[in-house]
Length: 387
Image (tube, rainbow, N blue to C red; front, side, top):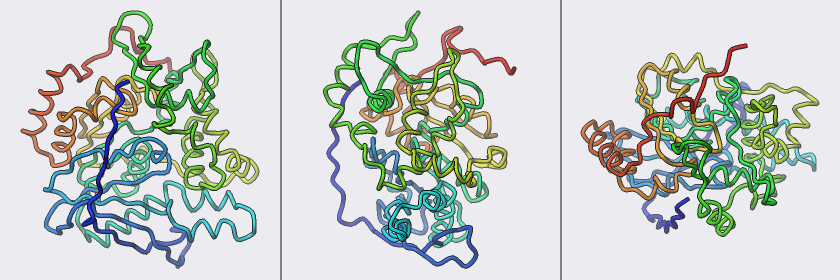
């Protein structure tokens, strides 16, 4: 793992704006609440618009959008969303104790996706939008895409957390274990996020000592689940952990061992799990059949050495789209190495602007840097039997 420190200077000219969205989109004539949206550059209605989304799970780890260099040819709109709404939080505590079932109803990915559509209509009218998502935010934006495929021209999805694909196809767990180290479950999940294994070496996966030593040395700086134990008052994070965990629930690997990510996420969202088990409220997952209706361009960028989610899930996700490009990088989920390469940012911008010449140029640079993962070794991946 290459540790890179970034210093981000936020321009005072960023345009912050609030939008009114329904308190609960599923209630007719629902009252409105305010959510915050920030234009990362000067908004120009004549330009194409790219939506990015802040997500409570991603906030634990990587400020992805802060580490990119955005081209001026597009508007970049960051949706901070309902996770920051004090009004919603107060409503959950009206009775004196948290209402966890209501928390799920108000913070789930379906509500967030419908907020995004309200913002798109107000900002763009009938114009389509480009979506750019990373990790957990990419999962939520994909849910938006399943609801409104006709309103999206292109999507760039980077390391999306599609745990449901991993579970439903019985892919093996990507979780790590270290018999000689006393890491908590949360620490092991964090290391899975930041780790970079070399799967190209023959035999067992290779982990350099520096990879683990860097994590143990800098884990407090890196942050993650292990340093954010207090989820009791962070309802948006609890809901997102619950959604990821329910996507993995029932998942067992080939050795019949439980999935570590599932165990940790269930523990950290246990009040929601208890409410779910007692009342069996409706859960909103992504309808993958609706993704078949998307006629725009999907670009999937995945870390081939991703340990948080089994990276073959990205290959399967690409099959859902009639017009898709799948690019696998020699990196892990946290993209520490990719984000240090100017060529990666060039490639990402070329996908955002749909610049064919730029894609070819940046791809060649990354190939010359030996950073493109081209194929799995023979026998490294086998589709599990259907029955």
